[in-house]
Amino acid sequence: MVAKILIIEDDKAVREMLCFTLKNNGFEIFEAEDSDSAFDTLKKKDINLILLDWMLPGKQGIEISRLLRSSSETKNTPIIMLTAKSDESDKVLGLESGADDYITKPFSPKELVARIKALLRRSAPQMDMEVVEYGNITLNPMTHKVKDGENNVELGPTEFKLLHFFMTHPERVYSRSHLLDLVWGRNIYVEERTVDVHILRLRKSFSSNSAKFIQTVRGAGYRFSE
Image 1 (cartoon, rainbow, N blue to C red):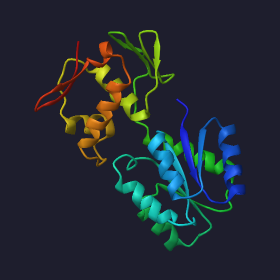
Image 2 (cartoon, one colour):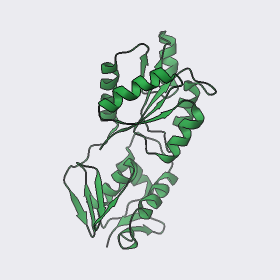
Image 3 (tube, rainbow, N blue to C red):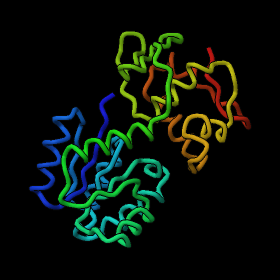
């Protein structure tokens, strides 16, 4: 799986340097120069990590970080704050706003890449790497590819994890809260409504013959079953 990184940075030269460095290290990059373009990208793409500049036009990085943490869709997306502010009080403020890591400018590109990889490892749940098949659906955790019969299916990271869990735990009913614990993680707060949104996205990604495996059990939750 290629990690998708959103760079929120208004300085074009810095943004270009970051894009060059990260693309050369195998990441897929998206760019934003302010909060409006950043949130527009986040609505359209499943971003795995955000590089967020502190000083931005309009909303500052601190405010953007707080908004990201208040949204169920981005609450768990790792954030690395980039800034020229090096005082300890500034670092504390950045971390308290929701950032997972903090790097002061100027920084070493190698250090940045190492920090990104470490943060992605910590945030990624452990997953069995064996290929899983159920009905017409084939899921390969190693290549992050899903097929519905002969057709490739494009899934975001959360839908992929949810599908993998269902395919490896079929024929049992799971409540929304159980799915949050088992797929999102026990120490992460996400509203139960979030599960319904991702279930809907998952169903829409498949043909009707395969989507029917994802069953709603009224008053109880969801089940993956033929």
